[in-house]
Image 1 (cartoon, helix red, strand yellow):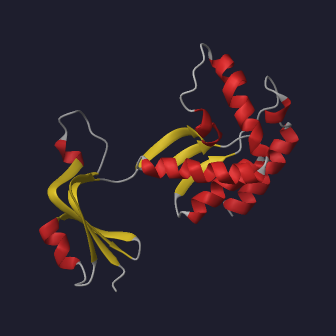
Image 2 (cartoon, one colour):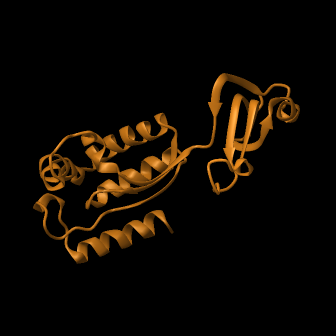
Length: 193
């Protein structure tokens, strides 16, 4: 069996940042398009009639018509430990932090909890088409380890790190400047090389 997969559907891809709403030079769109994947890498995209010619005879074909195929979304600011408190209401930010966020983030000192929520977090990102993110973890080294471990397991490109907070919050979500530095240095050595 070939290691190729041919996805068929409406294909939209952006090439550059638009200069305005009518700037059609920055994207490509194929009503009957295709994306050819070989060994987990995209090797071709465009009109189905052209891309299909490049596919192996035994390539797996997945027909998504009439659905839209497009690159993954990039979330440039997200808080991984807050996935369980999304849409929790409070009148003011500090009320929300004290009622929902800080109690939830305190749980991330536990590596098991961090790992479970990391799995849920990445399930939700992918379910919504997000394949890259810049994410805040909690003050706990275990939260960042779980975040990076789950991203690596899923072969996703992520940017993240533990937050550092040494005041104006409950003890369970505070660290010291020295522990923040030491934990961050260890995480960089472990996950960034």
